[in-house]
Length: 199
Length: 188
Image 1 (cartoon, each protein chain N blue to C red):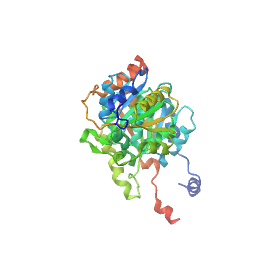
Image 2 (spheres, helix red, strand yellow):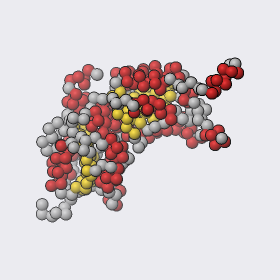
Image 3 (cartoon, one colour):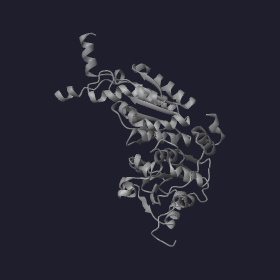
Image 4 (cartoon, each protein chain N blue to C red):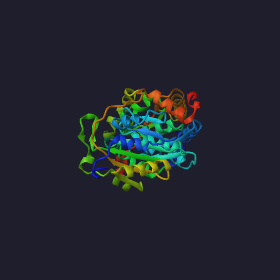
């Protein structure tokens, strides 16, 4: 990289986090993280959100507790995380080993006109996660650190939180199915098998 | 009531049995995750779940977290219940989009405030707004005001939620719980 201070590109980050994803289960927060995850490849093991802002981290917790042998990666934005920031306290107490929360932090509400979020004024989400008790919590600024984060998420040796500083670029939307029943049913069928269709 | 029987009843009020009955009902329904913001009316049920190694009790910072958590549980093949007070229903409204639009089951057991016999005026707005708010979001609401009917109401709600993939709320009224009166406590 020519400029070590250059901000990361969100789709490079997500492509790397999902590299060789195997049976990783992915929750994508509403807005650009949904499009980023979908741009990396639509997949039945993705549950991309089109609404319910603030849900991503806690869907991740419920899923991680229900599927302790699978690795769960939540990819969301700084605005979405801030809307339910208290969930970091809840998650820190439960401390599932198989849950990673990766916040793509462009310091903006990107879908609504790029207004600044509190992280633009220095609010440190990783420090909040640390203070809640998530011991593996960090700010990520380089692709090498993204690769480390990818490996942590795939290893599942403890709850991980990362605030990934990214460029506030507006990219083309890449959309997954919008029908919540399709997203839910294909995810459950993939994770639980055809049994999921009969109950 | 004869005076002697009356004084005995006052000396040792019978513990309500419905919390133990709905614990059994929820166990039989296969509940594994219990998401809750505590309420006095739920305290006995919470203790039962905390003593149960098969259930995970998760204390939330706000009730909407529980709606999302139980959506995640369902995606992973587990059933859960959300225990909350009526004031917490207001915190859940937008998050209810998730189970409604995804046809996911959600079982909520709501202990009422701002209902029969309420003494605290600040509890009235959300208490009286609980049912219309839930119904506006597409949640099926069953209210119960008789202690003897709590268990069967919860059982029916669990069947409805998990067999038809609907959000269902049971509202347990203050006639069941007994209305608090902090003014009496303050005089003591």
